[in-house]
Image 1: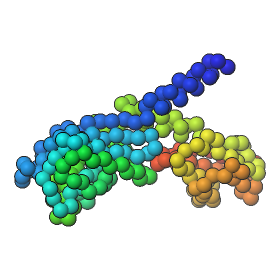
Image 2 (image 1 turned 120 degrees about the vertical axis):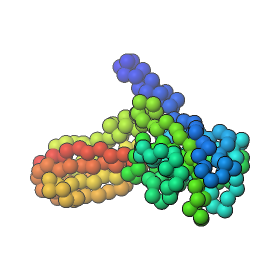
Image 3 (image 1 turned 180 degrees about the horizontal axis):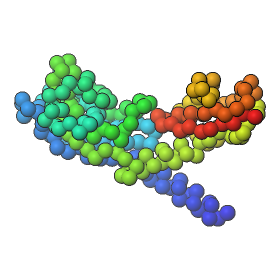
Image 4 (image 1 turned 135 degrees about the horizontal axis):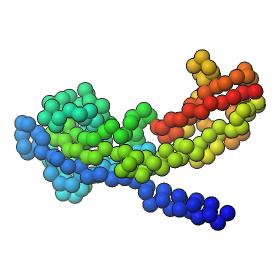
Length: 233
């Protein structure tokens, strides 16, 4: 019993300490037309445990003012910086942080949309949206489970969520649902969705009218998914 308690406490402490992962943005100075547009100062990016990502512009941040200069998280997909500098932001897989000021400390936090694989992003763009004009870009080490404990924690929380009892007759329940958001979808063997619910009640899910057989349950938690086989008797 003491061993289990100590293990739980260690896990809780680890999750608390590893509440976010941060990477510095480097390699600015990529504007092919005007060097004054290039970013100077310290810029970093932080992945948070609540499925959000934060862009941090330090007090020494500076660039040339523009009418509509915005910051974006971008997936380079192996494209060189020189080619990216000539690519419209609309043609890149991106996530917008927002409108920036030309100088000084700023912080932007946005939710990671469902379906966006954060591990694929490796660039931060500064771009004038009004005139479709490139400002500058920097590079960071992509977040992966091997260098970011947040992703391991998110996977651990998802692994803990499950459907019970299984097999079931009348009702099923979802274990460990203390998360920001969760959706449950149930599909029959033909792939047809027969149930969808975004708010999970402690009373459980009524499956008494389901035909006997095998179903697939898809659980979406904070932008991540898992599937589980469910047997209805």
